[in-house]
Length: 237
Image (cartoon, rainbow, N blue to C red; front, side, top):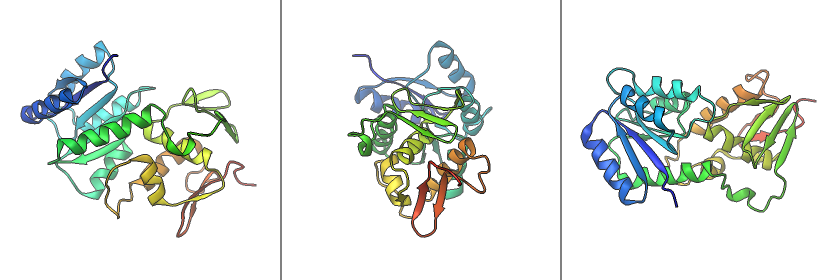
């Protein structure tokens, strides 16, 4: 069975070596890069199954790299690392398209847990829909195909990040039900988190920009004060 491939990009050779050695011991094929130029060489050969990307690097930084790579349809999930541990930094990382964010210093075991959670979602395993036999959902001009993991509007495909797609999948399979932020985070992440973590709001806002004609007055993903979010496939009537 072919191993999943992970690219680790960090300008600190000690971190590259530590992470590569640990992930290799856990059964992954690992390639490392110290900057954007080296990463682009790896990407020219093949895409990884997941990219671990440092925020602060000389030359092109991680935010710029993530934004550039996210413009490529179907680019694999990204976990961003950074010594900047403030909430606003995590939010910025998610806004540019990272699927998860881990502040430095970190325990390699936590990184492994997050990698597994992200890659599990990438594979389409969502516990709440395991018994659902319907694989296609329609709302407004949109069509979601759970088998193909695609979203189209009037037949034209819309590019989503892994996190955006998984959030949409949860919404369409739990339509017309108020879903709390905590419950959504549990479905999306699968590891310990800060009880004040509001990054789910960032993910919702990103998804709204893809499907709402007016994200400031959403028709499909509505905010339920004191409850969380409600997905209404009928839109505004």
